[in-house]
Image 1: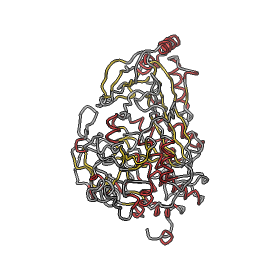
Image 2: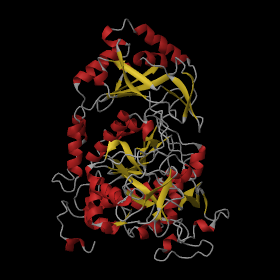
Image 3: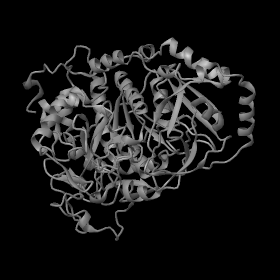
Image 4: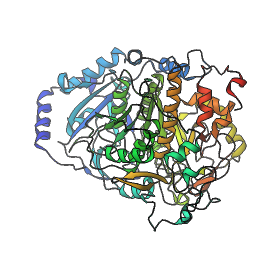
Length: 636
């Protein structure tokens, strides 16, 4: 990001100064709205230029959240009579209308600073305002000082503050204002090359150690010797690397395909102006699905200034498209390219809020696709995010669930703390000034309305401890009822009493929920076949494809899509364990500890395990409340 003075900024600042008269007294007495310690990854450099332009998002409280939450719970609970009775865009919008007192109070406050009329942009749902202002005006609005901060790893620059205030008269009418105290960490060249694209090479690259592929007892990559082209037992499609045929065999999905006419759909959100390349997908599809006909092009929707350049991409987004869309062909597919991400610039001198921009857009759509995959390189440390912001984003995910959308997110590749090539040396410190050693859960994986997919490796599968998935317990979100039995049982029976005391919140939302293969994937890159990548995005692509194909089955039977998945997944995990390929051995170390161990049933390494599509298909082919007779389902 380049922080610089602009003629436009100077003119804008002068315009605002000429509009503002004496501020009414009720807007002069401020109270602190949010304050955060300086994030460890960021270094304060200098005062922000007074004329630098920023776009503020002023978010109003959701007064009816308890009502919305009840709707989400009822339409997602397979034991409830309302299961599958998803809400329309109009019903969600009506429930989210903020109280008029809040709208009036905030607009009056902004008008007192010359911000009114065409200068304000209100969200479709009516629950927030956006306004572009110079830094000098933002500082007066919120009695704060903005500084230029530099990310210690990437060198990325951003404009932020660590504390802001609002007038007492509007304090209760504002949920939060951003960008202010939200510091998200951009993916660095190091983290991309060593983490998300760790095996970003060709299959025939002689620098790849054969041992990485051929150690069946180590829990590393597929237990096949590349040099001998030895088959993988019952999974010959996996004899060199993970391919679509391998996945179809391993997850009992052979012969399954999507539908172009059932009303189903699948899509994923992309950020940083990165979108998958259509030519790579064409080559991949013709190579791995030769009898399926021509590939169906996906629709690209540009949100908040996003772009579809088609001149470069990233392995993570390539595999999301190639596996997520390939395994569900010909189901209609969508890619949303959303401009901006945390501190990453959207234009030369402006910053935006990508999660809420994206979610606002999708929630305003009358018919969003029933399966959405999310990927954001590494996620963000929960402790680095203002709690109110995290709650609002999470609630938006919950509203998608109420609309009948399943949100699938990979657990990222950071073990119990910071991303590191050696999970034993991860940095695990609080940012509250105490520098206390603790596990660092990541958002949005901690959101209870997102289905989080852990990372496995090898045939047979085991937790990936070389590029481990993230695991954790939220400090912001309490453990939801749907996972109480599974998680409390694990903590009671598999964690020594007092172990890691004070390092994690035993009452928090735990993740991941399920798992899928994530390492050693064959894909097309640079218009060439035979490239290999290991990335947590692979897990989202696979589980997203499974969910989408399950929705195809349901829609063909005139049943509603699955929507918010987690209550159903935990019910299935308890009643029908054969629906998942359970991994019961291994551990993922981190923060200088052995970490948590795998176990029978749910565990914080791989959740319930990877999916068995055949069993899941039999289960979801019936209307719930789990009153289906066992003989109808067969031997599960």
